[in-house]
Image (cartoon, rainbow over all chains, first blue to last red; front, side, top):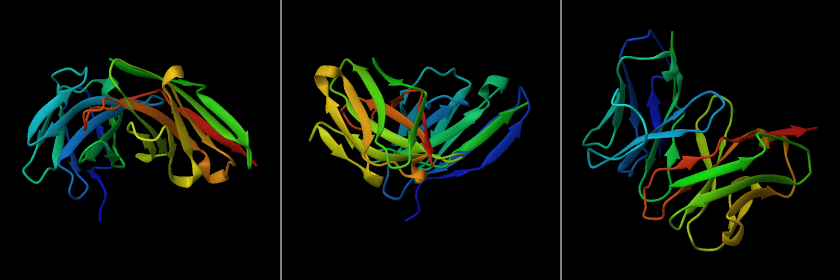
Length: 110
Length: 114
């Protein structure tokens, strides 16, 4: 059984560009959450998707948006990238109260 | 609102010694509490969780934690440290209604001295 997978592993973008990160949840999981982990910090909650709708949202600007597909996979989109968006982006899938994390996507904005 | 405070950003222990990583929480609702471990350049792995059942929770790799409501604490312990325990450890809190967001602490880096 494959766990949570994320792509790409690493990404380098320029300020002002847009980026899309992808996540495939663990088999049987219907909920996907996204977190941003800046260097030396704990993960910060961005938003959560369930049944293709955003169910919860953290304190992130509208430049951060997402989508969940019928197969429960998810995308995180970030527009108008800023240097401060450089971080490890973690996806977690869950069925109830236990979140399983993927390996993350390392985004560097130059 | 919920928050977690991890006391000590860096902890060093000798191999074979007791590991104690401290976590205090604040929550306006009955909390669920979690400990995750993160190895370099990897995602987070769940060590253990408290979900309002037994207050002493046993996890993987010999770790355990005790929920103490009176002290609002959920400290992580392991009787005997192993070199492979060197990693970053995060305490997290969520509400207890299921699939709620996790609020993480700032992490504790554990170093094992040979």
